[in-house]
Image (cartoon, rainbow, N blue to C red; front, side, top):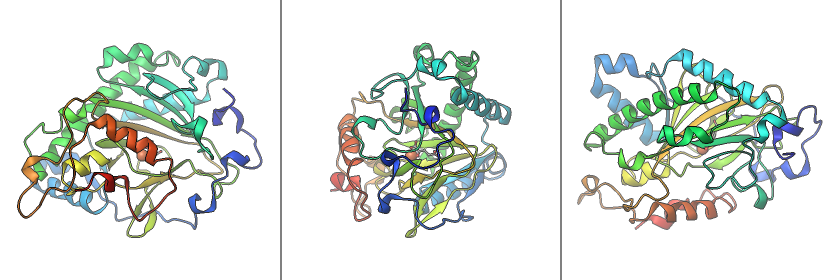
Length: 343
Ligand SMILES: O=C(O)CCC(=O)C(=O)O
Ligand SMILES: [Fe+2]
């Protein structure tokens, strides 16, 4: 239990040695918030011009691999309530958190753990705690979820349903933009996992990381954030993502890059800490299940004589094994995990 950052960091005056990032992995010079990252108003655009919004989304996925959406259909009240619920959750006593704490979170239906799935083998830890659980099918998974605060299962269950609906709506817009049929991504979207990150205030944010540079292994990710801290790497530099109340940040994962035959780009991103404010991000990962039996590969419709196939076919569980092995390697901008899958 002592490993949860939220259980020992309150009042700590300096960053403990096993949280000191090596210089090349530290946040570096001050990063400014980027105003060019598209903020797409789904309500206005869908009402007035569906084809414009599709173009807008595709352009964002090609240029940045990331965009924000507002008026997305998930109720603002629900988003606010769930954020308050998670503040309460991470402020609960250690004893209350123990019910879901796990030192071996990999493969668990629900667990609360520090840093990453790899804590025991890490040289340096990240300055965060994570509550992670499966969400689909809902009835199957809610019994494994926390039962404190007492409204947890009901409120988060409703939130998961709404975010899933929004997710499919956005995936259908992306499918249409790529020239794929409605519902094209349904089969590779059966895994719906929520990971709620909590980054307590850190005595020296220049020396630690909330989460290191990475790309997401899944198809697409939806993030609700309450404070600044998320950054993406683009055009040779790190850029901050502005926290917009009631918006979702949407970022493209490796599977969407591969299935789109490289037309959409996965985005490298990371999270920094603050010395004054705790940060909570409610992350929803959508992608294939680990036991997804059909090979993942570029959509046949996107492979043509002018756009030859770029990636091999593979089983998703093998990809995840490579992803976990790769994430332990030193950061290098010369290549990505995708090089292993390129033809
Ligand atoms: O905290 C965030 O905003 C991002 C977290 C993240 O990138 C992840 O959990 O994969
Ligand atoms: Fe991520």
